[in-house]
Length: 186
Image (cartoon, rainbow, N blue to C red; front, side):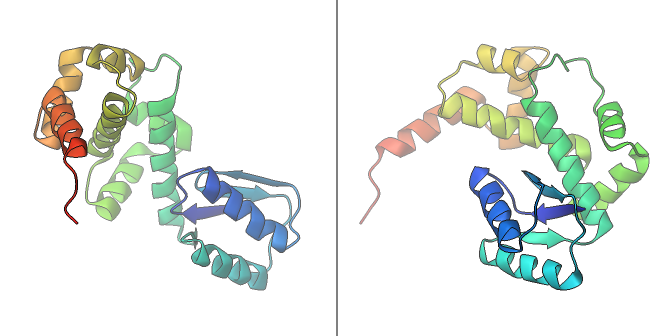
């Protein structure tokens, strides 16, 4: 049985889901971000108990099929962004269609209606979030980041960064670095 879980973002979430399933004496569990898979089907009462435990951890079972599709699209995009394979020339719509094994126009329309943003814009925003993290926290140069995230060029990365954030990447780094140096008021 596949279970889809909302708000999973880190290893602690995976551990929390696994712990809740173990409490229910569910065996053969595979837990990943956004989903859990177990060999046996859970009863309705087990699902209710599981959801109650997950809610206490800030997580929630997703029961609506459309929400599962949205979650799968987001997971596929995260996987594409963080993939070490050479996906530079891959078409996003083609990738999503293959990954989800479904009709892209349907998925795209569903995603846009639910999230208020197109899949393409969501993909760009997620890439820019990773750029911010790598630029600020890891101290990588824009050239290193553009190579790592498979941008066609540094200028392409810079243009997308400015469109999404409103400032260029180096100015963004200066702003965030300087704000860390200013002590907060007590």
